[in-house]
Image (tube, rainbow, N blue to C red; front, top):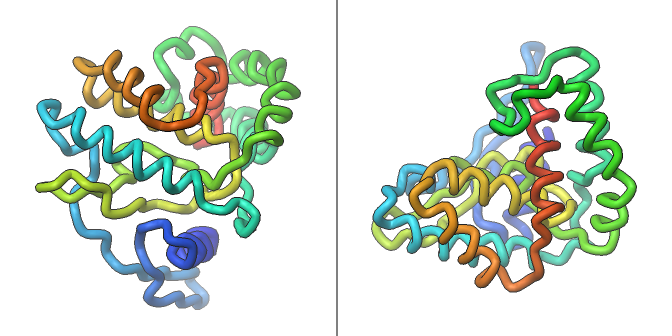
Length: 216
């Protein structure tokens, strides 16, 4: 239901992505059918064309983040994500494959404790600057035209909701740098120059390190 409702809301509010075609429930569960989003996922673009597609991605993400937050009924905020992380960590269910390299020397409990010390500050920052975020903004969830490299839509919208813009930008930048490591510095510089809003590197790091603790 979360994916269905977010797809419908995104479509109605001008965020390109899949349209809901049908929703069926029965004794075995629910089945969501959506339209296909044509194109290829952005991570399949070769390194030679990385800069071109990256600029288009930044523009598309900026437009998504400019969607009126007053009409968004979904929450993807720090408080919700931290509660989810507490649950995953308490069950010893953190998938270590999702952790960043710099996190691998610590236990999930230690990682969560470290992040918890920043929580009051991050909550205040988010309250002052909430936007409509994708919620899992990595390159495989961004579809682009294979010829023009224009963004044609966002997929996997199950975590779409209001959040600090850095929650999206941290995942996006890290995944792009992992995908095109030879352009890592240029990707960061282009994001800072083109996104059109101040970006705080400390907030990027906080959200980048919180996200892996929310998946099991």
